[in-house]
Image (cartoon, rainbow, N blue to C red; front, side):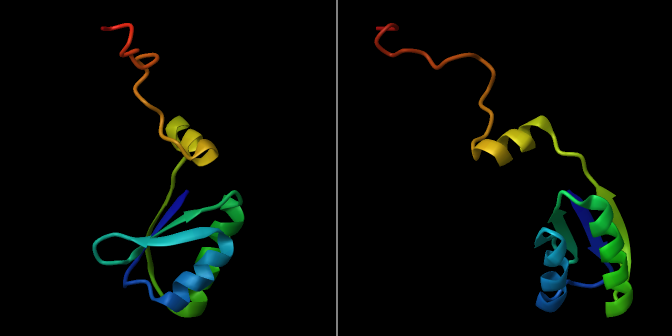
Amino acid sequence: MIVVEFATGVNDALLHRISEFGHAKVVGPEQSEVQLETDARERALKGLVELAEESGVHIKSVKVLEPSLEAVYLHLTGKQIRDAGGMEADPVADA
C-alpha cells in the first residue's frame, strides 16, 4: 500500500486519475491523504509523481507500507483473524 499526503485536499478529478494505478481512497481529517492499494508499486510511484507535476499539486509525503500477515489474510479470505486461542468452546460439552 502507498499512502500519499498532498498539500491540499484531494478532489474527485484527482482521485479518479490516481485510481488508474490501483484501488484508491481518500483518508485523513483534511481529506488530503490517499491510500492506494496496488501490486505495481514502482509504476504507481512514478505515475503519482508525474500526475502531481501535471496537476500542479504538491506532495507532502509518501509512505510505502508492506502488508501485514493479517492484512493479507483479510484480503484473501474477507475474514479477520480471530484470537489464536484455538477452537470455540462447545456449549454442550461445558454443561
